[in-house]
Image (tube, rainbow, N blue to C red; front, side):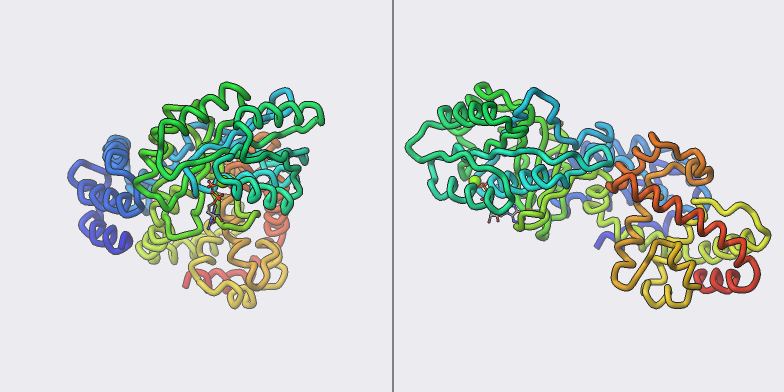
Length: 455
Ligand code: GDP
Ligand code: MG
């Protein structure tokens, strides 16, 4: 697996201060293999590895990292960029800013998950659970309609789904023409002041001319503000050809990658993004109607790289250093140096490495555990990940000077971590409490705790 591969490749790299052609070659080959295993298509892999190489060469290997770790950092950064990080923080947001109704057209092959996603999306909009720009958007009045006249069961399926999520359903029938249904639905939506109209379309098993013509005719007719291409992540390599055909036939505005709850490692995300040039906006993570999540480039990059593995690898390599870090931190606290969010983050990482969170938490002073994130029982891991996500979305400067964190920065951080702004505020508040406590724990208790964390 990737961990072993990179481990082996890294052994030869210790002690070098820069990334060079020679010392990155083997690592890059491992990265290439890992991407291919994750189902990224070959031309995309080639181009990506070339990009990583370009950005890696000459990179200084900073501080406690070795060249292997530094390269992993470069790969992660580049992968996040090509996943959509380069499009800016709001690229994955749904655009609903138009004279109502905002029309969303769903395109994709049969079985890709269009009808299910129509229901999921309607649900997010109806319940007001959709988070954009770090905050929930107001509840919407949503109408859904199916123009899939080729399979009567498909229309019934949408009716059922709509009923389950509390969206209104515009009836259609197999003997009608798709264009007539579409026009009638738009008309009805206008007259009854719907804010959003989602148009679910027919799909064939493979790309065919008639289907492409029909959907591009519908597009011209109803002029949707969003045209979402729905694609099954399990399709792996095939997804590329399908994406290409749809991208050429329609001015897509975004992609929904479904069935990411299966074994698919998300390589299709990279390929589809690359081929269409369009942002991924959502991922489907279950067949249930609450299984739709806003897409985050960084998280997908981690998934494709098997970042869990890489993180543990880096940790393994850094274990010795970490003990030194922990001691440094302990003495910092003892001498009353300023304890900042960088220290807090470092500490969380150490805590994470200890594995069993709940048993560790029992050993900590009660108020401390509380301040570290109201962590309790099985919630601990999840909370820790969210806290870490927030801290990771800050710049080192922001972590060392939390007072810089005014509204704009907070919103950016919340968006980066995929949490509401309130959670950032909560974390900062807890951190403040913790800082206060640090002062009290300077003697005795704290030093002991830090030794425990250092392993
Ligand atoms: P359509 O032909 O494009 O409308 O596809 P459907 O919405 O009917 O979905 C096809 C199948 O995929 C159904 O069995 C859905 O339950 C399933 N499905 C759709 N999205 C997801 C997803 O994100 N995860 C899982 N596990 N199944 C999904
Ligand atoms: Mg369908």
